[in-house]
Image (cartoon, rainbow, N blue to C red; front, side):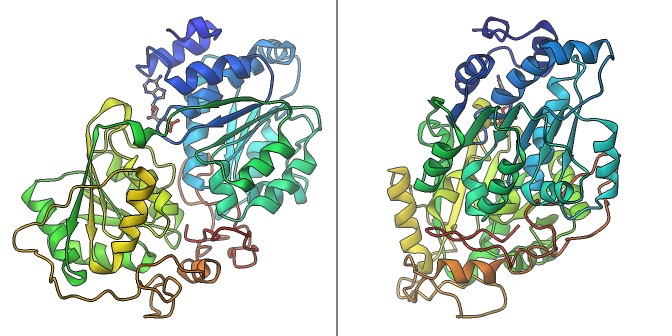
Length: 468
Ligand code: AMP
């Protein structure tokens, strides 16, 4: 199958071909015709499946080929925002907008991205200039709406990307507020990796007789990711990681830690071992995040240490190694994490350093992925068989305070309160002037327009995600 047989124009097919993509991925093959048909869409797909092009290509096609699109060509009408993409994080917003630009380069459409944590004035300028496709995180979009610097009255297509993450991060109220600002007659596309009751409720409210598609969870089907568990003592994780990196000559390693503090500490420890590492998490300024990501992508930074939310949406082609330095609190995050590697047919390796405290978490993960992961003890790092599990420290600098319901490694009932502790200052870069360089604002998450998201109410049923 080719992109042109899906009904895309030459201008769009040309841009896609230039990216080296010759055939659509399964989500693209299904989503593109469905969106071109004009109806609502409910799509189950996660990062790495090609979902971004799955909605970007058809919306560019729709917007460039209709009357208004033609008028743009003839420069007979001012621009109006006709498509709005909402995303949970700054990185994802930036990536989606980049895709819109890349795929739309031979159309007359333009795009912009807006999010919090950077100066609002450059964004106001961009919006004033006229934008066809706007990619935004919800909070900053509402800021603009509140001060009358964005006009959402002409939206024809709304896309909620990674809707499950937006709900996890407590954005439901913001999303509802945005919805209230949109014209009632529009096309709605909802993309989500998972379908909780909350997502179903949102879909019911938002979508009108949607076409539903779902592509297999990438990581349950893609066997190209070699997964391995290295049992290790709690205090030997850092030497083990340095050993693995040096011994195997790993050059591009994405390492996940549970907390921001843990990420910073590990960066220092690796540095002392002569391994170049940087951290990316919600307490880092946008310029630091952008720099770390750029250096990691171009291969000049050996190790990127990230927390889950910060890493969400990071798209690195052919990332060879993902390390779970700590297992994630939420089993689903394991799937998201390891999905950073082994993309688009490349082989990848995901290793997890698991200490006695994390055995229950590992069990939960294995239950979710329906696999028992191979254990591989590394000589010299044999774990102490008599070691006792200790409560997992979920927040930085508060030893023993937040455990998983008091049950070592268990699934605690304190999710709501402890998550706030883990990321209570996730809004540390709120209000900072734009510093990412370039004319386009880049960076920051949307929900955090006051520089703190502590006010964002937790949603019921799942821990709010505050560590960005
Ligand atoms: P996404 O799921 O949108 O994050 O995309 C995951 C990765 O797949 C990105 O690096 C895309 O550039 C890449 N990609 C998108 N469409 C295709 C395609 N048709 N063939 C191969 N790779 C693709």
